[in-house]
Length: 133
Figure 1 (cartoon, rainbow, N blue to C red):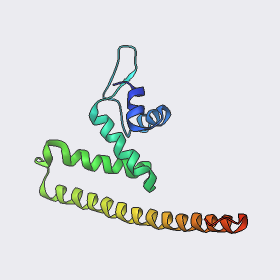
Figure 2 (figure 1 turned 90 degrees about the horizontal axis):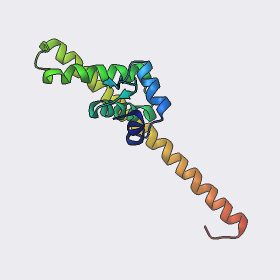
Figure 3 (figure 1 turned 45 degrees about the horizontal axis):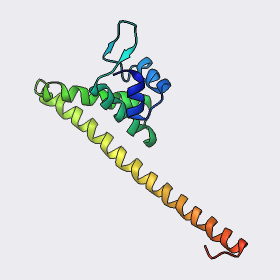
Figure 4 (figure 1 turned 180 degrees about the vertical axis):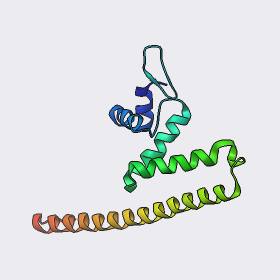
């Protein structure tokens, strides 16, 4: 699929998708005869991983590391990996999962505080305007 279709499906801008190509996170699987980027479902899945990591504050380097880990584990189902390498990759994947849980909890805390603040403002506005908000 063309980059416009990918942008619509992933809700990422064309510029962002091109940037991820330039930094090597998600390279299009092919190019058309006219040189246009062509993406597969697997490319879209990689972009979705990145899109989900971004609001959690992961860096581009961390995103690349996670994609590298999952690529290595997914190749041949990890069957050709030596046991020690497989264990090391799984431990790194576990660290990403733990970091994700911690960052999600931090976002929940921030959201809770923001909702409390919004409620306080609603209450104050109601008091000042004589409403019963």
